[in-house]
Length: 128
Image 1 (cartoon, rainbow, N blue to C red):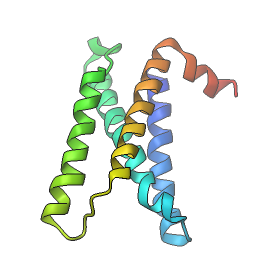
Image 2: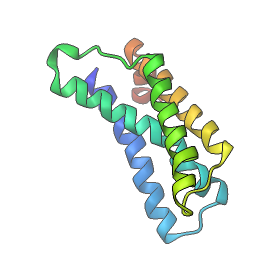
Image 3: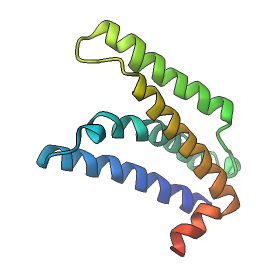
Image 4: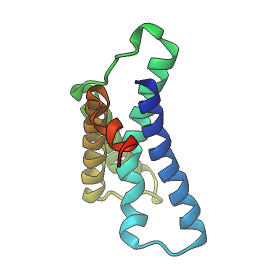
């Protein structure tokens, strides 16, 4: 089960790193430039937390982040990046579509986490 989690973590983190490289070297459509990072930010943070818990605490191999915890983390992202940071720095701009991107990313994490417990998404990775 930890291997599946690592695969998803590497996929999301790799997508982020790949995007940053492409963003520096080539033209990226403004939609991706504006929302891709917001879309994958929450899943990367949640996958990191879940991996840490499962790797450091051997008795927590089946630990899952609850819907409530996912909602709390998503809310923290929204408050921090869409309310506080724009008020404190001119480099940050509040955008309601960012909130939708955070919500989609959070939902994707929840579905993947749920799927890795049942094996659904892991089977799709192994047998495309």
